[in-house]
Amino acid sequence: MLSIAFTALVAAASLERQSVLEVGVRHTVAFPADRIGVSNNTSVNLTAIFRSRHAVGLRMLFIPDPPKVYYNRTPEFAYGPMVTYNYFAPIGRHFDLYPSAALGFALGQVPTTKENIVLPLLQAGVGMRYHTPIGPTAELQISPELGVAPFVLAPFFGLNLGVLFPLRDEEEDL
Image (cartoon, one colour):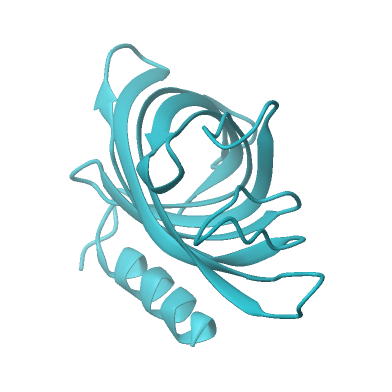
């Protein structure tokens, strides 16, 4: 199912002139209300950024120490997909501000009972993206983000690192 979604995302981006594909990684540190300390997660991202500056993407994340959910049952670890949306508003030659939203789920298993748990995931945030050329066509992007994950009452800090690849030449006609 995820392979179909990745294929559809790349196909949609490649049809629009001046669209860009971002391949990247993200690390997030959240501060859930159910504990002292933090909850980390790491993800791999594939995002299509369209000429209109709207971006949609898929994120596959891994949470090594998820927060408690559903009657205080805590899985040992969790993993799952998220769908993301961003809008990049330029504020300089290499800088963009952006709001972000992500929706998905993570699957985990309680170690003592072997019970499967589905963790609903929702995130909303704001960030700033810095991007600079690293070759004739590719760009490096670094973007810190602050936000909240309301299902676990957790503010978070995320850091994205990615490479932007143009999918169509600006001069090319459709």
